Every structure is written in structure tokens, then in C-alpha cells.
Length: 322
Image 1 (cartoon, helix red, strand yellow):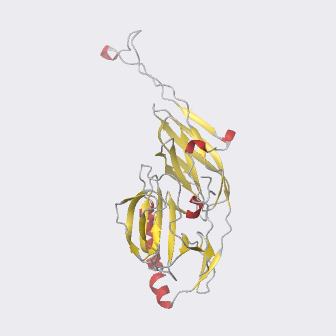
Image 2: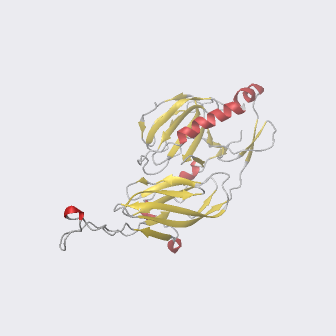
Image 3: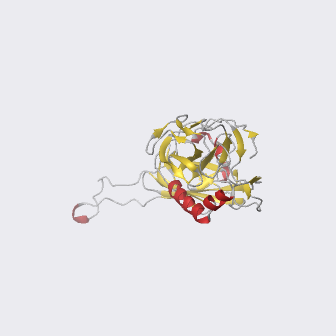
């Protein structure tokens, strides 16, 4: 397995209201409920001079995007600033719930490794606190990522036991259920951290040649090579929703950061947390290991936004625009 030095600039998460969403390109539509006159006695209209129930006008919210140019495997932080009570973001035919943050409602919108490139519409459907509904639209340009290729060699026993399609499918389904978790609460806060010290041994999305086969698929995480027993820390605040052994990823911890965003840590030698436990950024969650389908001690680090696996390193180097 190839080793290369990690160079990652940890960028502070800016407040949602500080990000620009592309200026005049945003389109807004708004529909306000028709005010109705309060009924008087016997169901007749109230007499003149009697106060009536009407909707208080509220200005439409503002749509802010961390970037309008995103590479495959990247993530866009969508923020809606204003008097909103809820809503959804639709992008690439996937829907994300808006979650209440400190200064706005937000959603992390993931772009998959095989998502189509080019200009794509992003739409926010929102509800204001007075019951009015509306939508905001913007165009996000998806850019093609040039994937690297890595060659891996596994023993016959490993390929028979752990690369069995049934084993792979079962694990993918189990992880999909966990990564579909949506907690309507912002748990993360501040900068995202790299979870362990070591060398970058495999990038997210790279294609794999197994025992000389043609390159295929996309690696679902970032691999950081480090000696067995090296501490692994939570990349941000959250709640542990999984801490168990898996066939391919070995000892695996998944942390829910709220709003549909989760991080995963695989191949660990031992756990330092339990399911249901709250953790803060930098808290010890386990130790680097070589469990599961692995050719050497390393940490497999994943991030999922709304069920879409995305490049975790881009949460730490500013390339997502946050």
C-alpha cells in the first residue's frame, strides 16, 4: 500500500450567514395564505371595527451556498436565513431536510462519485413561521473529479470470505440504514478535525484493482496509515450511533453529527466509546487497527451527507467552501 504525507489545512467553519450564494442568480417564489375574516356570532362575519385574524407579512428568506462549483464527492452547505420554520432541499433528485442551526436553517448536500457533471438546479422549498410557503432556486455546477487508481493484493482466504458479493451487500445495506439517520438537531460545532495522525494511504473515491483485476468501483473512505494502537478521535461533536464489528470494515464506530451528517471510523483495534454516548470534537473513540478486510494497520474514515458518501478530507481543507 502506497504512503503519502497528509497535508490538510483545518479551516474554521464560518457562520452560515457569512457565505454568499451566487448573488443575483437566486430565484425566489412565495405564496402567502389568504387572510380570512374572523367569524362573528352564528357564523356571520364580524361587525366592522372587530379585529380580524390575518397573516403577518414576513420577508422571504435568503439562500446562501458555501459554493456553487462542487466536484464529485464534494459537499455543499446550504443555509436558509430568515423566519423559516422548516423546509427541504432538492438536488440531483435527492431530498434533504433543513435543520435549525444557530443563525439559519441548513443542510449538508452531498455529491456522489458517479453523479452527473454540469450545471444542475438546486431548489429549497420552505415554510415561514406565519404559514406562508415558498421556494428558492440556484444553479450548482458539478465538476468532474479525476479518480486515482490503487492496486491491492489479498490472500485467497480473504477474497473468498470477505469479498463474497453476499457479504459485501449485507454490510452495505447495514451501513445504508445507519447513514440514513436523520436527527433534527445540530450537534456539530466549529472546525472539523482529522481523526488521527498518520500518512494518507488511500483517497476517497479512488478505483481499485484487486489482485490484478481491471480497476472498478470507488473507495468509500479516506485511509490514514498509522501504527496499531494509535488513538482515534471524533472529528466533531455528535452521538455514537454504532460501535460494533463488521466483516469488511472491522471494528467500526459511526458518529451522528445531526442534520443527516455522520462520520465513520473503521478497521480499529478496539473501541473507546459505546452506542448512545455523546462525544465532543477531539474525544477518544478508539484505536487504529487492522481488523476486517485490511492489508495493514490504518484508519478508514468515512463521511455521509444525507446518505451520500462524500470525501471527508474536504471538510478539513476548505475545498467545500466552508
